[in-house]
Image (tube, rainbow over all chains, first blue to last red; front, top):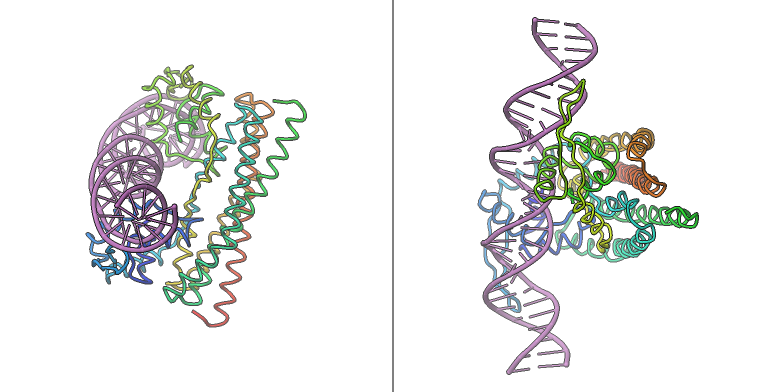
Length: 188
Length: 188
DNA sequence: TCAGAATATAAGCAATAGCATATATGCAAA
DNA sequence: TTTGCATATATGCTATTGCTTATATTCTGA
């Protein structure tokens, strides 16, 4: 679905590969991301498919950039995708939970250390989504001249990031408490 | 990381590809999953790498099954993986949120329909994690003769699934309310 | 003047994923 | 007897992912 993420952003505004990478990093990172190499490859494939086109644009103080613009075919493809209902919950992959699941085979104290580290990481993420991401979204919305519905949609996805991090922190606290209690009992 | 998921289960108990598929479906589906074809391919690769071995086991009322057993090298590889700290939060990919993000370009009412559908899907998932998954986990724990720490770890990951679904339902309610309010204002 | 960072583009390649397809055995219900 | 489903194994193949690597321009600070 990287294709649609790129078409989606280009539907707002002509952008370069590097712009797209930064937009994703700012605005969608809690639920979508892509490697820069993947972005360039997919842009190339989209151009070869006739959905977008590009031109080289010199810049005064930076290297030249390749700016991509959505073509009518790309516009229609994006509209088709948006109209298409999503009927399944997408399955998640979560590395930490996989490790927790099998950590009964390891050291409870090592798991505890791991969970404490992740609590800090998630705190940091939460802080970012509550403080920096609203600013990034506001700036990016202004840049693409988004509508009221755009604003609601973008903020709703940021809000999902906030709720997710809060949920994760609650789970981490709970699990750390359970582990501490088990260790205190001498069962490991 | 499918390799480690498979090694992890085999560390408890010799199992077939089909057993592993069912164990994953029962116990880890909120944070890990794999296609059956991938499971078979990975088991084959693990056997070729000398981490596991297999034997064919006839069954009275079912087709023969190939049972995989962990070798010492596999045991050590799993222990190495468990001891290795996970220092990054794994980035998520969430198809619905990607669609929500770009739905400012579509119809607010179509998005509303989509969100209502997902609310039902997530309710169903939550019910499953609260009712069926504890039974599956209890049965599977008994089968592998898990320790108290195993029980805590397995239940903790189920609990993460519960909290995730509750969070998601809360987010869906919130977002549906915001959309309804926007539509009532006539801004879309 | 040079090094480091930011900006900017892009290919190589191995690993992973996912869907489709194929084949077979055995049981239960119509 | 036949059909459908569960059980069970496994390959083909395309798409996607992710990490590495490469190259270049421009600016800033030491």
